[in-house]
Length: 507
Ligand code: UN1
Image (cartoon, rainbow, N blue to C red; front, side, top):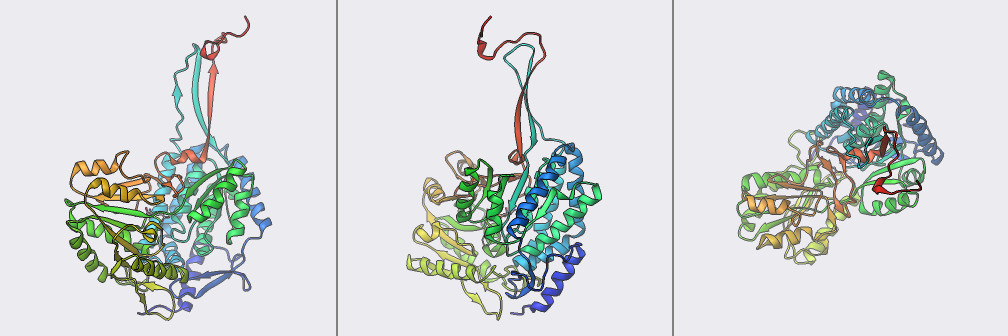
């Protein structure tokens, strides 16, 4: 396997950052935050993490900016996001390069992630003229009853390594048109992509005359996030990451009556029914399970196949898996990039040991691909005799467990029998089965698909899930409501004062 050397990766990172206009005030010779590339495991540059006081100052800046930004009419706030979308389009390949360098995504997927940012900017610009409130019929004559959506305040965005920029953009583009300002703490594993996005947003703000304090970037690990989470000026904490992280963030924010939007893990499954179009199903399965080296929160981790077609499905998926090339994510033809680091490989190999001990058979993959540097693995396909505890856990790596079923009811029970509730799908050409899967007693996930895989959602829909996934919704549909506060307004335009519910008080 041929992997580029770290020196060349460092040069690419520096060139992409410079092209995005990132100032060089973040990199320092003796910084303790190491920007690494999973491609080689080598160091791209050293950065200085934010001090606790700097986090507080960033929130204060964002709050000052909020006091002005909230009075700017929403369609004019849209102009900032429109400009951001233009700059993201102009720098699409620079940003994709940084995503590949820091998250290890193959180029096609890195470009797709940047496209997701551009798409959500477009969505948010349209939204800036559609922040609709309702008008309700008042029960009192001469009264008007309406609701108005107002900006909320400072939004803290805490994002994960696997979607280092898209998740930021879902939150930020929408928060900005809603009149909020943002403090972003990216994953400590992907600081450079964040520096580039921050620079582009700063430029967009300068170009349209918006306060530059509408966005602040803070860098670092857990303590930086904790400072944000506990800051009473932060109105909404939107956090993407592990269930463990969510368990810490949720109660801390609730303690101070702040708002939380959590996007945590997923243990996503697809049901493959006897009537499924298998050519289509196999393509959907392979992209969802092996794409992004199994490191999406929407990655397919469980396949629940009707017993009559299980051997055939396993044979076809295995044959597709054997053709997947793992290696340099920049190289054409590579479909599986590196795992984010050693811990991901350790988790993957430990899960495979447990699966075997539970009676599972590794049909193919699950091997470390030889390389001096970086952690590359072949996606694993594992037949399991039952949904044992390792199958019910989310392992953030490319492992696809195969289970079988006899009746659709049994398949749905197996499907829902995990703590998470993010994404799901069914492959079937039987309308009754499809509808049953989508019905209230079908999939219990926030995302339920038919004849496509579990990953790769469009930005137009609300994204998020139930149970241990955290319940948050981001991106499209009416997810914007989480970023605003609602005021109910009763206006009396009569000269009488009738009380609601017919109450008589005094004369
Ligand atoms: C994530 O993995 O955190 O639906 C987000 C998808 C992407 C987003 C995934 N649009 O797979």
